[in-house]
Length: 66
Image (tube, rainbow, N blue to C red; front, side, top):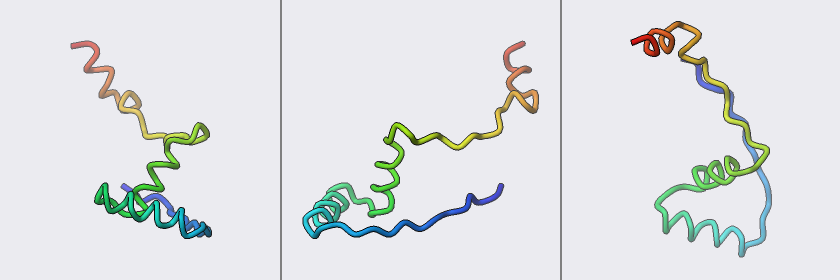
C-alpha cells in the first residue's frame, strides 16, 4: 500500500482564533492537524478519496452469492 502525497498548508489567523483552536485541542486531547483535517472533511466540496472496490477482485460478488 502506498502512502498518499501530503501537502502543507500555512495560514495566518488572529490570536483569538489561534487561542480558540488551542483550547479546543486541549479539551479534546487532539492536535491542531487532527482538528483541522476533521473540519476540512466537513466541507461540502470535500470528496472522499476513491478506494479500490472489493467487487473489482470478485470478493463482493462471491459474498453476494452465498
